[in-house]
Image (cartoon, rainbow, N blue to C red):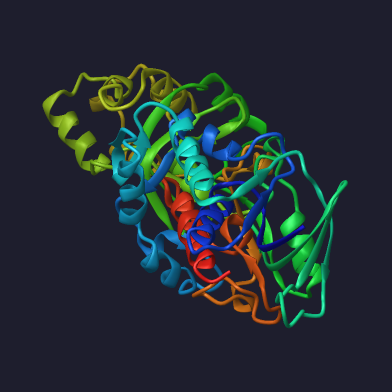
Length: 400
């Protein structure tokens, strides 16, 4: 069976690439090893699919080459995808930080993509696993470059697109397929690790966070080089929530992180003012006005147990300053992260130096393309990774 374009992986980037190529009149087939395409689309955003962001900027992406993503993102923008969503009359809403979600269901986005596939003649096959890819001597008449073996069929194609994603969420079918193909064609792979993933803790703090499980608090969470102001969520394993997920992509094993529990206040000044205005106030009652009560109780046990029943006026200024400094820069050292099991993305991947930023084609293997999460481009939380999928899939689809 001969096709112009063979796309392996029926996720966001693969479907976008297939649609774009088919609209140019190319014969396109999409193969996916799972029983359903678009599984990560369906589960994303709590089933509402955070499909893009109003504020797509290159500095919201991590890569060994921070300039690589610029071309694709500028040629297929968030506004282009929003236009497609609106064309299909899909209701959506804006949430914090420019995030766009479906009002009804993520199923609307997948249905839209499959409708576009059907309209443009894309064939989509599921439950089909690729067993071998063979690079062929190019046929001058058909331009055939690849033989793709599956069980039980085999196919030939001019262009081969690898859109199988990274290692995150293996229960959704994630594998190292893209990296194996890169190795076959002698392409470098930047070492991978879990990104947008909750932190884990051991020892005393694990016990503390277990008791706080379910408590959410807006903070500034930082390392020495990066900070995010959003909510953290205490869990029975450690820390999650938007701020923690964002920071996890920048955190390196063994590093400390710092929590400012009072992002809107100079805590030392606040305590000093309270000491003058309400000298009989207990510290826990002051902090309970701004923090969750359960959190205040744990902080009290951790940082001022000997002064828990003393009024502010009876606590020495030196002690109050130490408490203010600690709560404004609470240093913690995670034992690790939850890993690929719950990670939303995979950091690292196919080295961008081996790909064209305009087409996503391999520089050393004509007709071979890598797109989406398989590539060493990872976005922030909030629709950025979907936009990279749409953009990288689109620019490849223009040329395959």
